[in-house]
Image (cartoon, rainbow, N blue to C red; front, side):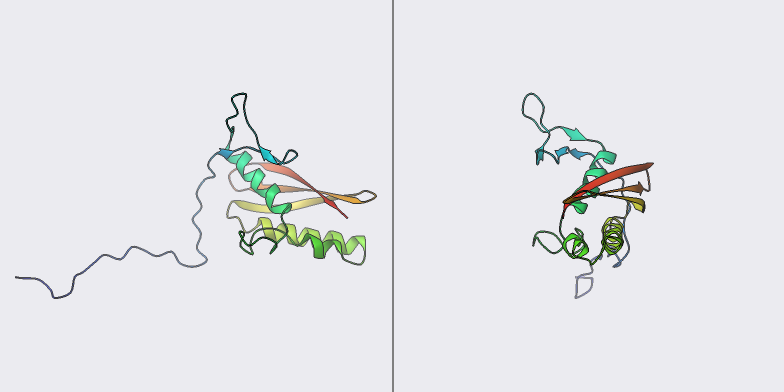
Length: 148
């Protein structure tokens, strides 16, 4: 018997931490945030959304999720809205929300930038609108509302 005493195996290439693979966003199912359920057609089948719609739904979902609230999400998912909304004055609240939203959306390798924040204060609500630019698509506006 010719050969070696120990078997030789090929080890696959291991991803380096911090190195990301930039794959295009694929389609997924549509979600209706007002109803809190998936969008369904007349036959009660879930409808699909394009890659851009899927990315925008992800952005909105991240902005409406409180960070570290749910064990099923990593600490990268969500924003710190409660601590941001408890700041002393409006300028501090706006600054904190802008920071936490930008950090949360920049986690995604597809996000190029987040900017142009507009804050609309109501009696007991705050509406935040901002521009998100994904690397492979044009700018899109995202709107999120918070109860104060």
